[in-house]
Amino acid sequence: MRIALLSDIHSNLEALRAVLDSLPSVDRILCLGDIVGYGADPAQVIDLLRERGAEALQGNHDWAVVTGDTAEFNPLAARAVEWTRSVLDRGPVDFLRRLPRTLEVEGCDALAVHGSPLDPLFEYVTGAGAARGCFGATSRSLILLGHSHIAMRFALREGRVEGRAFPEGGAETLGPRTILNPGSVGQPRDGNPRASFGLLAEGRFEIRRVEYDVAGAARKIREAGLPEFLAERLFFGM
Ligand code: ZN
Image 1 (tube, rainbow, N blue to C red):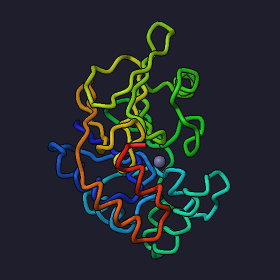
Image 2 (cartoon, helix red, strand yellow):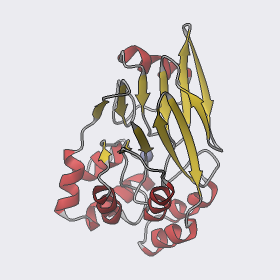
Image 3 (tube, protein in one colour):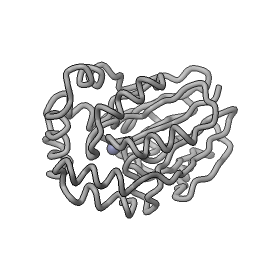
Image 4 (cartoon, rainbow, N blue to C red):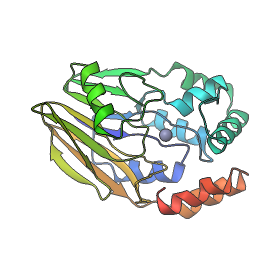
């Protein structure tokens, strides 16, 4: 079973296309949430994922677009949520509404969520403390998550939690307990503007980074009247 892991696409059609074009042959495409928010092509991104038969989880931005509740969001993110609500028809909103928040991935003893097993929508897993909480919350050997937009893994070995980031990509053999974040397709925040995604097969994972038309995605964000910073940050991966 070969699985492509995509997360935090955030309505960035250019980045999603580049990732899908670069995929080797896979059995499943799994999207770990935040399909929409920030970028200018929410409907097109949802359509393309459905066309490719991707399975998807609900992220906090997807949830906010469904509910209109932006209490947990900063002003720029909230504006993007409101804009997304204003341009999406009912069909794609219903698609976002029906997305599950957790998914057991058969065949690789994995639990997939957007944020964390303890708080699938909102918790960020970027340090050893949060990672330890995740390991304690499930007996699955592998936890797949996104949300932080940083490609990294945590391994639990003899009671110690070790983290490693993959700003330039890389590959590793899976240990007995691993948390894997494939990074963000549409808005990387680890200083590398290239789209990030993961591949999972036969006890190994790989993080890959691919170039995409950042200028094109940024231009659409500006043309949509979304906040300038949401265009600017794509050039720097922040
Ligand atoms: Zn996100």
